[in-house]
Length: 212
Image (tube, rainbow, N blue to C red; front, side):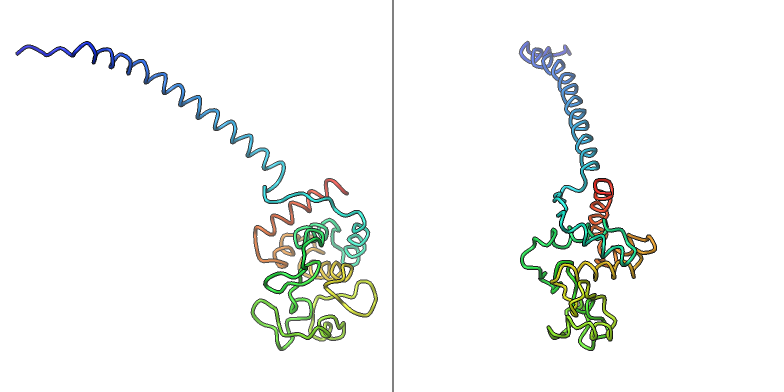
């Protein structure tokens, strides 16, 4: 039985296919290499510039003396306090200074954390049922063991007063590890989120490099 010969047009198609396959492989290899290079550059850029969702804002110069005084009072780095202020309310530019879950003021304290968790109304996330008068009463705060501090000496501890809020945040961070150098522990206690810790540390290191 004789072998059938392929039509000439099929021979031409097969020949073209044989020539095309190596070219396609080369093109694909080049594309993969370009993709790898571009993405490696993006990774390096991300590492250098920090997380993409963090937009750098200039630290308000008028706040720096406040950061330093509050931080010195509780033996913590002032740059850590500035980093918290940046993350919590974008240096108090957030409007209103009240979160959907009830965190209040320039440094976003839950009422029960500010006044004290031993307050009889405190449970759950810490909104509590605390009167506005008691929220700023230094005697009430002392009685219930809260972190609120009268930073400016006017007789009340108000989370909506920047000086009071900074002293209160410094007090909290100090008592939760920052005074001993355990910054990660203190930041995590402030907000139980690994992403939050990373965000605050990003700005802390940035300010340490740029401002100290």
